[in-house]
Image (cartoon, rainbow, N blue to C red; front, top):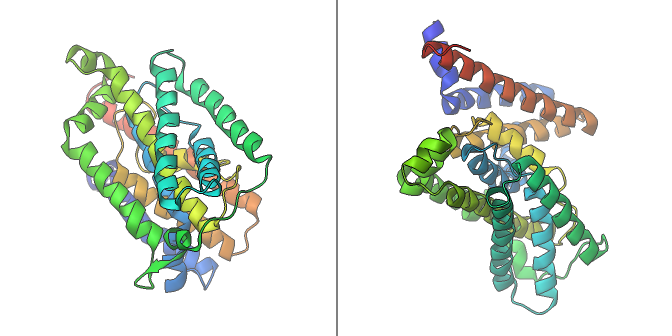
Length: 326
């Protein structure tokens, strides 16, 4: 029994797959509207942006070096503002979306260069860029949202495919996960990411450019935040300069809950996606049950602390099994 439970807990994807229906049943008891088809499909719309940010955060954390990106929420906000300004200037909305995503990638690359070239701790580096990017968004807009998007732009964030699945989930989030999952699992770059995160010195001795790998991971996180900004602007039909506030903390939560080790070298995008589903269910269920917002935040904080403690316990158990003295 111990062996089976240990291996179940060690396989984060299997554990989360088991946890999803349990959480759903508990929340269903709290609110009779939670388990309705409309709510279950509709709440995926709320988790789309978080899924993109969570995948980016996961990649940065897996890359090791105490990697973390506290600026992705601010990148989300600033990119949305840039998108709104481009559309207001007369640029075609879809071309503006592409330009905004590229801009977000440059912001992410800036994070990577600050971390790898200036050798600043990622926590401090991205905390600084978080304040900088967020401040720029507020200064440009003076704190007011930018509106005026064309009607066809609403399709991506507000419409449903087959009248069931939100367009943003089927057309953006799922393809992004498929592409990134393939890159991470089946390409040389993906193998380099895990090797760099597991043992930076060994990776460097084997000829891997550690700085380049980590810079690309921050760049990918920026691109994913840019995609999230496009979705969010289409959903809200405006670009708000504060829309990304606290999103970085939620992204860290789903990355860690999904199995990403803060020490690097461990984690999966599939686990992150399942963690997004769980966190979205919890948020939706608590709202339907009329739980005060402050307690919803407390629950999210508890999930993050529990996930970190759980990861640490698994790491200690694995080390003992390998005979490592702690």
